[in-house]
Length: 436
Image 1 (cartoon, rainbow, N blue to C red):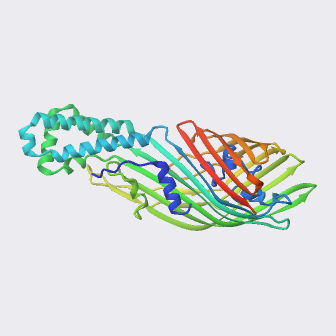
Image 2: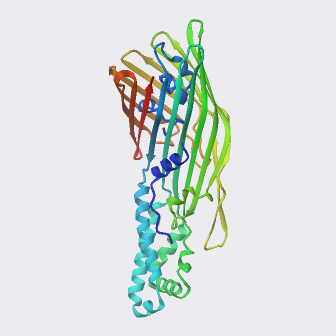
Image 3: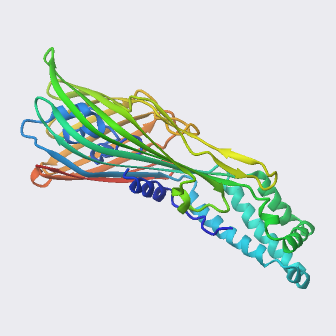
């Protein structure tokens, strides 16, 4: 058995994301909006419009100039079952069980039958306890990043954007027969002695072939490279902005499924488990200003649906000899979000709601998010933000968000955000932007 069962879900998501150039509830990460409950469809600024709603590009003020975001990053992890700690624990139990098996020799059993059997039973009990506690547990992580160059213009505003998001989920699939087999060793000296002698005479594979629990890791990274354009029109004295972002979309999928006893997070990048796909997609949006203080918006991300299959991974069952296939499909679907914002020079209040569900792997439940947020700018160079985001489908954690924005000389902008919520969910993000 390998002895590398330890892993970090968030490090998997982030490392895969960085390795492939790629916030949690969105297809983008933008620290200001993420700090305000993940809102921004109506309240975002022109510099970040290419991430959130391309129509925002046309809302630059006359004195606004080129804005460069380099970069915006964010990550979120949910681990309500303490899966990381439990995988660390089971790693120790696997190591101990492995060492006990390897130490079983006919001579050792004959010389010290009671001691060998007792040690074997104890190791089997510890491993069975850990497997029993791991049943049905999952952990998930998300990460996002992006860069953008936004060029305002009253005729046609343009932005060059590269953004991406990653989603990783790790789950355990514990075979009850594994637990029953280990319990039979634990509870009967006769069974333990017989199994120990068989292993000593015929090799430890006689034992390990009876252990077939698996750990499954699914990860998706979607990177977008596009050019956003937007223009503002007056319709019945209402300023209306329309924007669109045609983009090249690159997707990497990881289907790392293996025996839980040989799980090694370093294998996630192995080509055996990885597939990729390249296609075309488009984002679009619209905003309208009603009076001096009200803005409403509508954005559509990934308006072209795509289904992408993971690699087909096969694992042989040691007891039956049959191969079990593990395969999934990642769904890219239109995500339509409506937003409204009230704002003046001191305060911004905003709310967003998804009109469609957020989909991912077919093996996972869908989500649908709503968020509210606020921003107060007590000083020209300081902004304080807070918000709340909830999943109306109740399949993801509800979170509180907050953050700060610093804008010395109104040229360099540094935005920080953090979130915390139920099911031991936490996250953080940062963004650096420069206005020329």
